Image 1 (cartoon, rainbow, N blue to C red):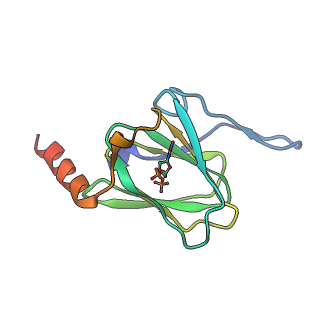
Image 2 (spheres, rainbow, N blue to C red):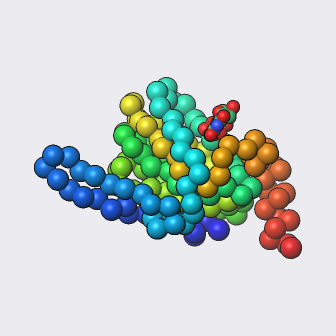
Image 3 (cartoon, rainbow, N blue to C red):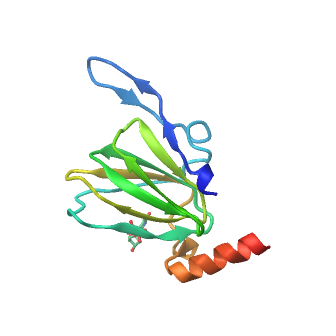
Length: 138
Ligand code: TYD
């Protein structure tokens, strides 16, 4: 679970005119990309996330500035610092996450495997833990 969630090095075409990176669904991320959304103008000290997704796969990139993503699979937590636009963090389904430590001007881009679906969210931590235990015991 948590071991599947890794920082991925993206291709980087270095050029004196400016660098270029790219992401292809099914190649650099292990899913087809159905949606892109981004967080920006995040006030200092703000947190985002604090939920899990039942089925959604995501890939998070710091397009500008930096922030932390904390992932929790119900057994252990890992904090990832994202600060390069040629790195991204793959987040598998059923992973509680929150984002904090946003620098000023940070832009957090998220690639997702499905369109927005409120029913895919688990927003209550104790419900997440219960669902995780049920999966482990199944
Ligand atoms: P939410 O996912 O709760 O934000 P975060 O976890 O980063 O704090 O989304 C905030 C609001 O935006 C919520 O009302 C749902 C809406 N939203 C969409 O309409 N489409 C989307 O693709 C996303 C990610 C959120």
